[in-house]
Every structure is written in structure tokens, then in C-alpha cells.
Image (cartoon, rainbow, N blue to C red):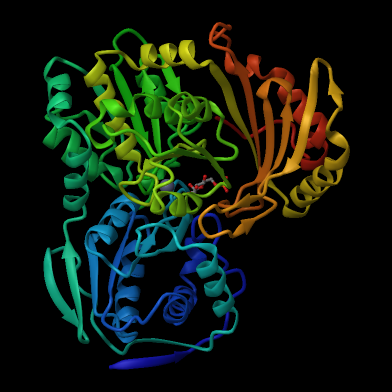
Length: 547
Ligand code: G6P
Ligand code: ZN
């Protein structure tokens, strides 16, 4: 039944920040997905160890093309000698749940189908990424070997004439000698959440009349949020909105940030609004946290969860350390210092946290891009972060806003914003970054109005566990008083280039915490434009997204 199909390499199959992401139409080309999957199966025995008889976890966020891709992967897995595949019912698994399943069942690794927060549907995006046995994204050594293999691939293995498997019924079948287990995509994950959080306290919060609005944005967090929040925690039906995963996310951009979760922001404003608002993205690894008329920045969220971690059962013993990506604000560092634990600064990309978590050097991790997580899995985890907040609301009796304001009063406030300039032609964006890098030797000491650049560099990271070095990770302008402006190009876009400009200004504990963020950052915004000549070089007049 095994069939060997000849093929030719496709250009551009290098995995980005989080796997290979392309338009659905690109993935629909004959052999495109097959080449990538075979390249993976070809390099894994060399990079990791024999595949024969191993267990793989497979699932995705349910976007358009998910089902087709799962069937293709199952046949190829069987033809490549995999012993067992655990696949979520309907081909579904959120990214954090896939990580949890890999870990719990000691799998060899997993294939996750998702383009995260990118729009879906026939004209939208699709993606595929590989996670290793610790449940986290494959390190660069593997993704680079995979990419190299896609450049010289000549054939792939699949099954000849095998019928598609029924993915909608729980249970075990076989496919050409390989065991296929269709599993409940929620069960293992929900069980893990029950171990980490105080479900009794959260149930009591709802019973006392606490009101929440969880917006699943028509994506994969819906079934998880319904099972946990409305099911196990007894929140009223309707607490989870947009909870039915749709192949095109209802035509929306399933990215929980102020630019795309406008419906939730509107619902959270005014006296009648719920106490707690939250949203998650396409594959349920991102989170946004809101109070009534109050939006929490992801950087503040990480710092606050760290400061209160011992109030939550799973973290009662304290934290080993806190890790954040470089562009994320330094709010978490201030907390780490107060707790007397290490603060780690890594490049953008969740995979960089993996070694720190495996080595027990960090417990909580977070990124400005609405990602927060811990050592419970090796992915960021949207619903986990939301339950962490809910547990804190229940344990303290405080509101979201009062918790954040008290945090600022104790640690100071890091005013923070990210300006995205999307759809810049790649050559222009590259030229902008090159010009910025060329200025690095002369920027320190330069003054812009009241601001003085104290240090300017291109962030480079040496992994403290394996010693690997990742350079050119973003240009940093560090100003007197801990303010920062950071520039980097996104590694996750699929059209042109996106310039991200990260802006941060520290206001001490006794300072003014009530200014509108964009006002508080105005001089830094002006400085960024002057130094990088953003308008002139991008050909655009304003950022397309401000978070
Ligand atoms: C994904 C990754 C994150 C990363 C984010 C933004 O969500 O998992 O680790 O922070 O994309 O990446 P980008 O390269 O687009 O700024
Ligand atoms: Zn995501």
C-alpha cells in the first residue's frame, strides 16, 4: 500500500517564528504540504532519533484546510513507519492542549496545524509546525535542517488509495499497521487546569454573582472555555461568546488585541459591563485581559501574575524565575528583582523559553504579543492565563483594575505600546533596518529634545543552557531612565514585511499613572520616527495597528 511519489522542491519552506505559514492556496498546491511533512520525517531520525514505532500527536485549530491536512499527514505518518498517532476529535487540538497531550503521553513529538491569529478561510492563511517531546516548538537546529531538506527533496511516502479516516468518533483504529487514536481534545487539558488552579474558589466567585465575558473569537478556545468555564466552574451559559470554532473564524481576524477584539472592548465598557473580560486567538495560545473599562497590557499581565503567583495552588511554592521576550516591557524584571529571582530576556518566539523551562530556570514566561504561560506546558497558553486571572480575582476579591493600579503603586508603571507598520515592501523594510543598524555605532550620547540615548545595540542572545547564540534579534535604543524604543521585523507575517516599533517609558511608583498611553509615549514615538525615518522609508503615513 505504501506509495513513493516523486516531487520537486518548493521555494520558501523555511519555518518562521512559529512554523511555516502561507496562504491556504499555497498549501493547496499538489505536493506542497507533502514535501514539508516528508522533509520533517526525513530529518527527525537524524536530529532526534528513530521514528519507527513512535507516538505522534496531531491536531490543529480547525481552520479551513485543517481536515484535509490531517488526513494527508495520517497517511504519510503510516507510510513512514510511525507506530501511533493521537489526533484530536475533528482534527482539533489547541496549541497549548497539543503541548499538554505530548507531555502527558510521553509522545515523540507533535504536528500542529495553525496559522495562529492570522485570518482563515479559503483566502486566508494556513500553517504547520513541529513540536518536540518536551511539548515545545522545535528549536532552530531542527527547523533549519527541515528547511535544508525541503531544498533537495525528490520524493515522499504516502499510502496508495487509502480511504480517509473517521476523525469524528472517539476510539482507536489502524491505518496500514499504524494505530490511530481519536482523543477528546479537551480532557487532558482540563485535567491539567484543575491541578493548577483553585476551582472551588472560582466556582464561588461565579456563585457570588461575578460576571465574565470570554470571547473565543469563533476559534478553537471555544470548546475548551465552554468545558472549563461554563462546565466545571459553573459560569452561566453565554459567558463564553463566539464559542463555536468556524473554518473562517466568522470572517474575523482572531487576534485578541485592542485593534481586533473591538466587540469585546465595547462589551466591557460602561456600568453594566461584566467584571472580567478575556479573549483568545485562533489556536488559543494568546490571551487578552480586561476589566470594566480597563485594558491590561500583556507586559503588565506577566508582571502581575508573577507578583501574585503564590496565591494560586500550582505556584504556591514560588517561582524559579521569570522570562520575557526582549521587546516585552521590563515590568516583570522589577517584580523578579523584588522577589529575588532571575529575570531572563530572550528573543521573540516562544521556543526560546523552552530551555529555561526545561532547566528549571524560569516558571512564568510572557511576551508583549499577548502570550503568557508557565512550565505546565511548553507553549503559551491563553485559557491558562485567563484562569490565572480569574483565580486571582476569586482569591483577592479585587477587581482587575484595582489589582493593576495597586501593582503600579508598588512597582511603578511601564507605559507601553507597540506600533505596527504592516505591508511594507520587503526591500524597503530591509533597507530601513539596514540603515538603522548602520547608525548604531553613533547613536549613544545623541539627544532628541529632553531624551538622551544611553545605549544602542542589536539584541543578541546566548542561551544559558545550550550556549547557542541568536543574533540580530532587534535594534534597541535604551534611554536614560529605563525608557526604550525597539525595532524589529515580524517573523510571522505572510504579506510583505511588518515593522514593529515597541515603545516603553517607566513612571516610578509615586509618579503619574493616569496619562493616556499614547500621550505618555509621544516623545518616544517622535524619536522612533526621526531615528528610523519610518514614514519616509516605509512610504506610509501612520502605523496600521497600535496595541
Ligand atoms: C507568535 C509567536 C510568538 C511571537 C509572536 C509575534 O505568536 O508564537 O512567540 O511573539 O508570534 O512574532 P512576530 O515575529 O510577528 O513579532
Ligand atoms: Zn496563536
